[in-house]
Image (cartoon, rainbow, N blue to C red; front, side, top):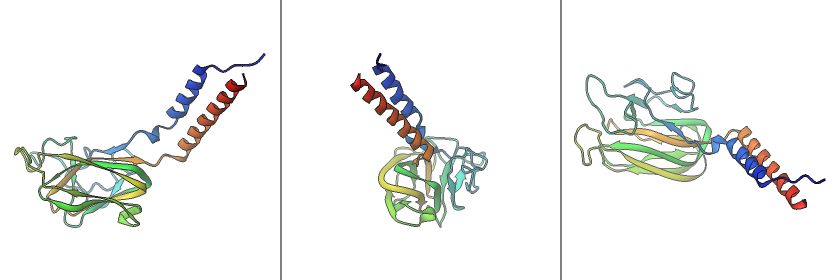
Length: 209
């Protein structure tokens, strides 16, 4: 007696293969809500006090949160905190790499050409994979703080990146909700391939039946 695999089994096999690869779909978002205000972000998101996202920042990247001394920003997508840089700029490093697309929100009190750059290596080394220029938008249509208007930018790029350079803002540039798509872990690829192989076996059995 021949065993016939149902379409339902085929569908379940495919769903299982896709469910086994969450790293392919979920972006990593750095919202800057936790780092201490006016202090280096550093390894907060890399085994430090915050969630371990495998993301670190060089020292010129500082956290900024509103406090009793003043309201520094308003209307940010994540109001708990933002990131800003001083004269030397800063790098966001992802040792495992990221692919596909980078997006972020920014508020700038002046225009900055090529202010954000995506690099293939750590700390701004390797090849340039993409750049962003920023317009003067900080108080566009608002006036309740020095950084009250935020725009979202995104850029798709080819290859694998390991760092993003945020240019020297001299206190005139803030960022929030930086989003990247981390390179999937090797086991995620293996699980996906195993699921697809199983689906092929089911398909062949159906044809023979």
